[in-house]
Image 1 (cartoon, chains in turn orange, blue):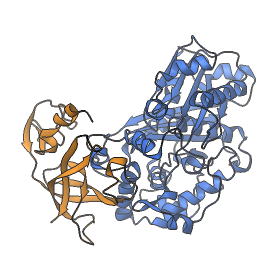
Image 2: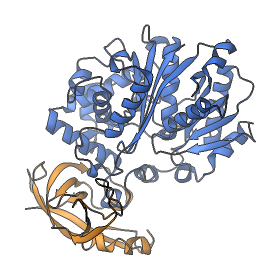
Image 3: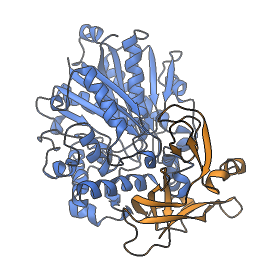
Image 4: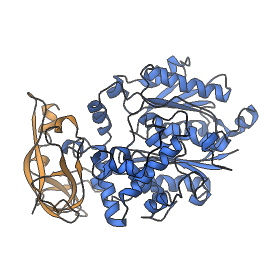
Length: 129
Length: 385
């Protein structure tokens, strides 16, 4: 991945910055420039609370190449308490915690390395609370 | 808009076709369709192809295929909508003829997926998801559909046995299709004992990596009636819709809005409803997809798709036979070709040419082809003329 492609996403991946529609109040993560609910084009930038709830989940046993050293690993769709939903890995979970309705918080973690000399990509992963 | 008919079909064997290149396969299917239609020229063509660039390092596929089919300088356009590329190409061809811009149009689809490693194929397919916010976090396509399955099981009580029943039924059908990649019969126990890819999906819940091509010839319905060739099949409904690119952006992950919307448009245009459909090819990239789609097309009440397949309602001879070709699961899933291959199967069914997998008395058929996790869906309703 070219470094500029990573760099331009830092505000979202590192600071969890969402866009909040100034007209209808809908939250978007990542931020957008057009609200799909009301068509408005002006947004406020707000950091998401880092807490949410698992909506669905799976365990990836056949991973993409950059994730081979992590497999098997859990992935979930998490509905953040501010409204947006995200796809994220779930880590540090005990039996019974990879479940619909489980409360989680996001932590800043390493996502994957692009080979031995490439960029080390960071982002968020979910931990049950 | 003019009425449009399909007057010729062609398809290659599906599978690991080592001896043939992407262009070889496309030309084989294209020539078969041209010969089947007994036409002496074509006016324009559309080529469904998801990722020639990542699978074989080839873009600019429209002119390449027109050239090798001996049809240059006709207009030729490659159409891409991930795994719905073939269905989207069919809709482009339909609109080209319906509008009056062209008379005889070839719609083909092709994908050459086995020239790259499994890792590279996985990467190419993952580009149909949201690269920045899904794939970046390590989720795969089986993983995304697995999350739909978990949500469907949680909400409706759908079981792993019901998922497996889809694969068993499609392999039964595929065993009757001479072009199928995996024509062997399988059992529910066999599916449940196969290796897990993304819980709860086993390897036998997943469609394979496939080389293959398919093509159809379209022309105005009144021209088809005069040509006197094989029984023409009229396209009486065409619907296309989109949804959020990311699965996580959808309020309900147990339904596919693009499928409901595209089917709604096709039903409205054709004046037909789910009860009028005699045979249907649906996008069974994973077993859960067939269950969700069978509900969203209106064949079964929401949440009852799993019980319906288990009861045999979707078998040949059942209430609504789904994927008589074997579907993507058994016939194979050459991604850009799959939507066109569905049309080939429905035309064969409506002509009465489907041999051992023939649905008796089939007059009205339907195809449903989707891209990604259902971010795009294309539906066509067809009726024998």
